[in-house]
Length: 286
Picture 1 (cartoon, rainbow, N blue to C red):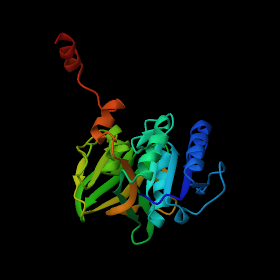
Picture 2: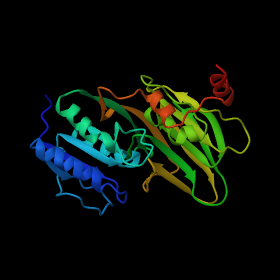
Picture 3: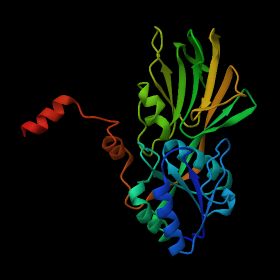
Picture 4: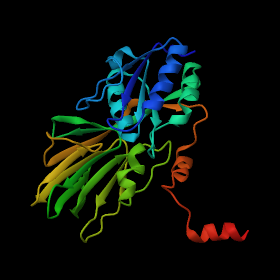
């Protein structure tokens, strides 16, 4: 059995989640488990007494992928697993929807889950630590005009992309911003990074899959309207025009339930991956 004595909630700042929070509280009371809220910088919403992430046995992210990312960062600092619950969102990082939270907590309490280690993207500028991203690191234009970003892998120049910017994604994050920009999805079990140019103006800069042992370098060489640096969508104010990005193994632990659907199946169910129209017509004809 998994020793579950303290739950730490990380919640969406605005979404309607009162019903699922009531369900969690009722389950916890029935199983003699304490419930607190892990404070997140910049969030004012309070749903429970504050508790340190390190004092929790499990962090419970209630919201969507953004909430899960907050919880993973908090959990990574103290080596605590995160169970993510989707509440009205696509939720690629979530293990279960709001309607399944009781069954999910039952599985965790019965030790019928896996704390899957997920990688991070460690960002420096050039030797100053900037932070760690779970999904992706984006270097994008902040105003009118294009930016030029030189992409290097282990100090070898790959391309100089001119356009809206560049995104570097982890395997887990390859189905987010990078995929939306035309980058490949890295299937479960594949470690590495994906470098995808955003709306390139001319040239040829195909998305690049980089080995986990490599270092990606991004250098902004032209930026009339300014440049914005983001880690998982959060501004990275200390970042500068020279970034290095490294793959960091086992940065955080994400709970996968015993009966959880495979990742590619989840992409299809959420309609992020769709069959060709001709294939659908063929199914109707059979």
